[in-house]
Image (cartoon, rainbow, N blue to C red):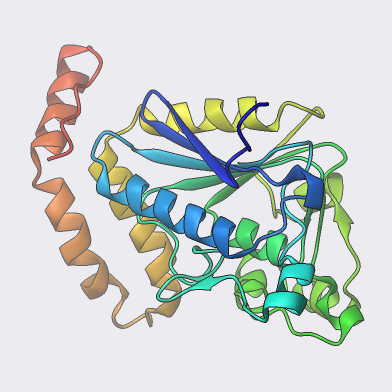
Amino acid sequence: MSAPMQAVGTHVEGHVLVVTLQRPEVRNAVNMTVARGIAAAMERLDADPALHVGILTGAGGTFCAGMDLKAFAFEGVEPAIEGRGFAGLCEAPPRKPLIAAVEGHAVAGGFEIVLACDMVVAARGASFGLPETKRGLVASSGGLMRLPHRLSANLAMEMALLGDPISAEQALAWGLINRLVEKGEALAAALKLAQAIDANAPLAVAASKQIVQASRHWSDAEMFESQRPIARAVNGSADAREGAAAFAQKRPARWQGR
């Protein structure tokens, strides 16, 4: 008899950590085991200097159907990790870039996981939505707060109040996803995107992500002052000097992450 599949699997492709939700029998619904597995993977991604980008995906042709409602009903425990929130991710995404590779459903908490990622690759046939209002619930794991930063106010409100799913094609038209690929190709396309990011300087990538995320909270008066220490630390690094030298010498840069 084969060993049971872990709820969350990980493997490394170069400098990319691929994290896979592996409960296809329940459409990769999140229970505490999954939440702990994702949290551990995100901690590994940020702590390991050899890892530059993360990818989050689901096994069995679907991404994630949200919280495991049966586990919640019988165990009475929401799958949240202290300091990290739902699924060990939604309240504290990693410092390094994280890409969602979506096949099939990404709904309810599954869509909130997607919205906690930095970029999204989706296959045709994928769907996204926050159906909580149809069930008398509130999408409280970041979806309602992140949607208005990804969509116009009217479209964010439509998704929040109607609770209807949208297709991958519609998500692309609305700017919710970065790449639309054929069914079964989301992970391969996400790896290609991750490798393109990985070709760039890791310090500069992490700082750029930090500024993009933090700047939504900065006023016009403070934004340059708030950006300055983040940018200065990178622009004075050995990698910055290496990037300039590589450009001048017409050769690939050799990044050291310092």
